[in-house]
Length: 280
Image (cartoon, rainbow, N blue to C red):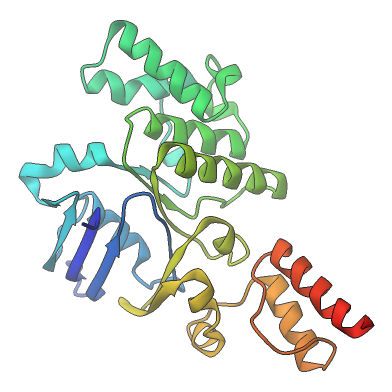
């Protein structure tokens, strides 16, 4: 059974703008799912429907078999953790430790269990040395980890991340992606994220949904969707840079035409293979 089922969901805002139109998604436990599309495609609206921040105008959303509706929201919000694009929208306590403790205390967790969980979350996000610091004085990457730790402390089944690498420097991006993949692999937590940075999408996703004007345009494995180059470009998306470079070299006759590598490691293998054929 799918852990998340979005069935024929539409959503129209009070001003009459329809953000989603009969959207269907099926997400299994432990998957890594990217939801991509241009600005205004409906990604943020979709994410808010997953934990009941918004209610569908029509259609239904299920999380672990529970219909997303008022009577189930407490259980659903324990299962789905949200990490916002701007960490400052999520952090408001005096210290990192207090930030992590906030949700736990509101869930009536106290004493030794509280301290154990705080320590676990600090270690999981690799920020134990930041525990007594003010989150507002930290770097962008550190704030991302604090926001993540505060959500992980609640032991969710799913992490929903809106632009997880926004405002991070290259080293911060690499470090944060590594952390998210570790969480997915070692804890079995499902990752659902949106990003305009197509370079990171193959590094963090197994499957991909392309959303535009509130509709699912195409879905499939990450490789299958990126193979639809014309559809991507028609929907204001680009290939990962390394794939675009190999595409250009193929069009120029410098490399054989074929499936495009999506990551540097894939490109390395592809180029070695191509050069080996040229040398022979």
